[in-house]
Image (cartoon, rainbow, N blue to C red):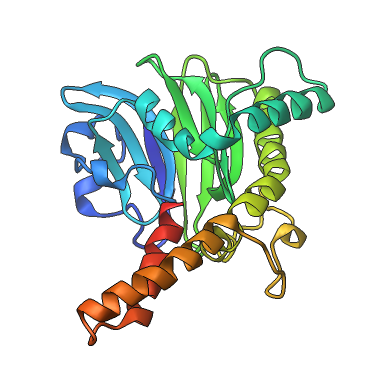
Length: 270
């Protein structure tokens, strides 16, 4: 069961989204594969209803359905961390041990201030994933039932009631929250050192809600910090030769505007 219990303002209250029991309304939810892996995605849950295989909730758009399997979505989300696979695994094991936890550390997808971690499996057989960066509160309200409160960057919010036969108990949920946030904090210096100014403007300018997942602002690069980025340096070197060729072919071309557009597209791609 995945049910929207409460929402502030107009978020998630569009008439087409009622009833708010999303599993019953799955057939009427908009099919929006284009919204997947957006920074505003807050929850994905496996579901099987003909072509609709996952129910998702976006902080700005609201609930929607997708034809992509949940496991495929998380694999796509995790691709950005592929260059850091070894470091992330080591961080997961170390943080898990430092917290005194036992067993296999759960998978975490941290990317700058965005991070996702799994809860229990749904009846469809795959994990339910939530965005820790939007999470304000997570409480057990009954056997295998949790109430999850999300807070958006515009100070709006909504509450989701989630039921899963394999949902962890309150103690385990608390451990998952703390573990996911700790791993994310630990990965910040490596990501910042690798991507430098290409991503810091896009990622660190976002304001997190004041919750357990809040990352220490002292970890953000200050405006005066000079970060050496080999990718940007290489681009600057190649751009000089490219600019000469472009200007020779079309003297009217606005090279400054073109360069700004390329850097902007490149930053979001990274």
